[in-house]
Structure formats: structure tokens, C-alpha cells
Image (tube, rainbow, N blue to C red):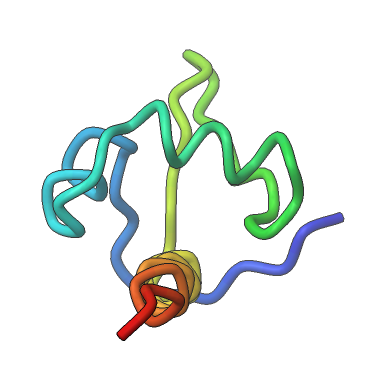
Length: 69
């Protein structure tokens, strides 16, 4: 079972907007593994916690640092 922190929860749209990325990219990261599957509401909406936000920030930063000089 995925571990999630406490605190505010964001749905995928607001989280993607906060990070400047496409929601499809977040779903892709869930599918391939660097991001755990999020908790879902009874209606099926994904809910992300601060730990998910931090992990996505790390992924974005790491991805950006691989550009050649």
C-alpha cells in the first residue's frame, strides 16, 4: 500500500498547474513507477499529498539537469 503524508490534498489538475506540467505526465509517472499510485476519492479522483508534490518536483529538477552543456 502506498505511503502518503498528512496535510492538504490536491487533485491532479491543481497539482499539475502548481508544477507547470501536464496531468498526463503525472499519470505516466504513476504508470512507469517513479510516483506511487495516489489515494482516490469514492468518485475516483486522485488525491496527492505534499510528499507526492515533493517527489514530482525532484523528478522535474532531475530531468532538467540532464541537458548537455
